[in-house]
Amino acid sequence: FLRAVHDIQDHSGVVFDRADAPDRAGIGRTLELHAWRAGFSLHLEISATNYKDAGFDRPDDPPNDVPEKLAHLLNVYERVRGRDDMEIPAEQGLCFANGFLRGEPNDDEDSQIDLHYHLRMAKDVYFTFHSLSNLIQETTLLERGPAIEEALKKRNGQTLRKGKRESHGLKFEEWLSSIESETSPGMMFHDMTLEVNSKTATPLTPLFIVDLDSGVEHPGPALTLEQAAVHKPLTKATFSAAQTVALWETVTATLRPRPVTAQA
Image (cartoon, rainbow, N blue to C red; front, side, top):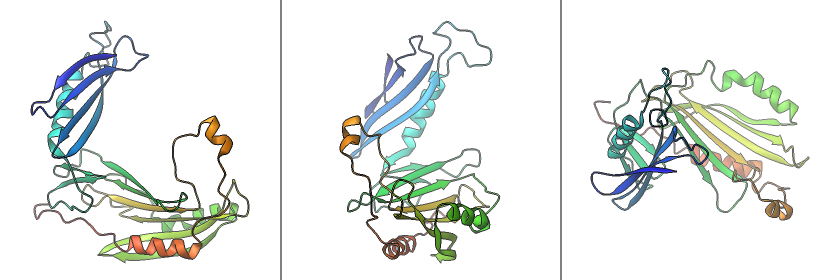
């Protein structure tokens, strides 16, 4: 249910104020911004509530936070821009796929960025990157070794390599393993992961995790009944353990901190 449409001041787009279809009272809102700026399509969303217009009086809830959330959404929009794949911004802010959010580090605001890269040549090889600004773990990857070894033992798995490495001054821990598939007995898939700043995450030095899965189909939408009927399960990994390790080493050797300003 569309409740309102707000123009953006620079006339680059609009914000749709809508209520979810089951919510006829219009309490739960989504403010959805669509804009076109400097050759990039921008899409931002934020959730809001409006008890006042729905006729409810709940003292524990704001009567109507739509104006506040709209202002916040537009503030973020003013600080976000498109970014080419090879551009490394020198100013402070957060990089994400095809975009950049300008702003100084803020200990009061948490950021979590998840990026997924699938190999076109293989439907069972993909990387996942996670960056979290405030998640401080009690243990590092290698310190969790006994639990990892126990899990591998239960799945007929083995450790290919584990230890500490360094890339452009970035010190991280890694664990490379092969595990027997649950859906295709006898087939081994390969799981590789690394962590940096496990116990010391901050906005400038976030907890950073990289995973490589090889021998596991790319995540995607659930198959329809028709698709499932003709879908052939994976019976052999595209890459061997040695090939997966070679890919892992090639990619992880490029990891480096992004340059930031002298003030940061």
